Length: 247
Ligand code: PGA
Image (cartoon, rainbow, N blue to C red; front, side, top):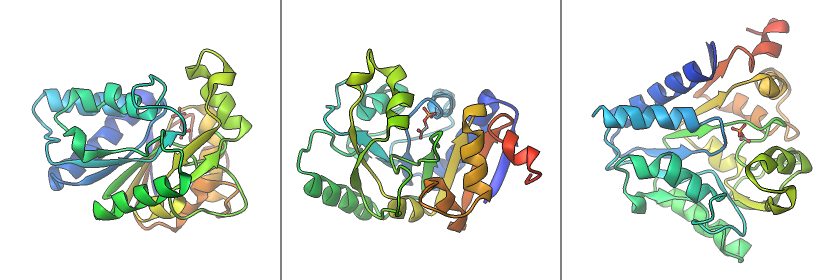
């Protein structure tokens, strides 16, 4: 694991975008694993700026998103498909047919999970996987639990996650209770992983993930076993790592 310490959210966003930009330049038809949530918004904005400055070409880039709420359609403004369209895809020259997100409207869980796993393998796997991290250490919607799940699966969201996501909905009752997510096996199969974290609320999750035991109770801790992980985190997110003299 390589921990890149930065001052704050804007610097995290610039550094993360630079790493993704390098991937796009080195491999113009790379497969990017993409993430949603508030953390990557600045990273996507920086990528859009680079695209507008003529530095990046997304025309051959392919993408696979980590997760999607079950029950939300792509045009629901809380769906992750909508998030990706408004925060990145609509602003760069990526081809829509090159982008992949689990289909939240597929009621047939087994079919959708198999379909998405085969989408990822048909793409040839993910070259660079972008990840945020939940306050509870989740990655994608792999919530703390008894075991690491390998492939795409449907999860019941924890109360913590529902509460954390309620800020995007009118009422907490509107937050979907289930989601499709890549498994930790899918994530670990990426050739490189870029985890971004900002703010004090992430400090415990970052500390446990980087320096605690590898356990499904802290899903991101499995990243310790991957040989090519970059963590770009700001001072607040790294505060516990620092007070424990780990960095
Ligand atoms: P956030 O979520 O970026 O909105 O904090 C991250 C996550 O839950 O993976």
